Length: 308
Image (cartoon, rainbow, N blue to C red):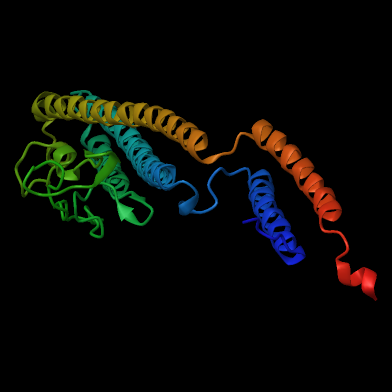
């Protein structure tokens, strides 16, 4: 039995086809405008999940880059402070050579001792340098000034970063990769005469006492030898600081490469092929116009229009 095709059926079919073409055209227009292949997860669930994972990787990489940048800033500030301490120690050595000379009279030795005390204060001040409000050489106790001005040569920080049992200043510079970036002040300057550790402040205070006592032999002997040993230690610490800085700079290069690679992968998943999209847009626009013309010719006047 033949099925009767009514005008309303033809109109509904034409409108349904036009709606389908319009929806497809609208999606292509949005893709061309946003240059994104995926507007919502339902467009492509698999690639949408890949894009979210890649975006998380990009965000994590940016955080590692910020960590490395902060660590490099800390290391640079530490190097500047250690450089100033080194300059003061070398000045102190010149003074000890002068004060240990038997031709130097007691008045001159007293003046050298006074100058040496000022260098000690300068060294302690530089050892109390800060970076973004944190003391550089206090170990893990970054809110505590490591050395106080005046006669107190005691170290007031902790040994965080020097002793594995005590946490120092750590930065995560990659997935599961951490790095301790601080230098412990007591490892360089020691704790003064009270500590009896033969480190920098102890040696310098002994030298001041020997100068005031007129003991030139001790000044040019044990004091000068002790200062040279501590100068070597200071240079060793600076070398270690420089090695860590080089590692951080290498990490910066690696993270930049990882970020570039991940963004490239994200683009391949998420971004639309603009040439392909424009071709599809032109094709669908032409199809839409053709559908409109075809619909206009198919949906003609009904019998009622002739009976009016």
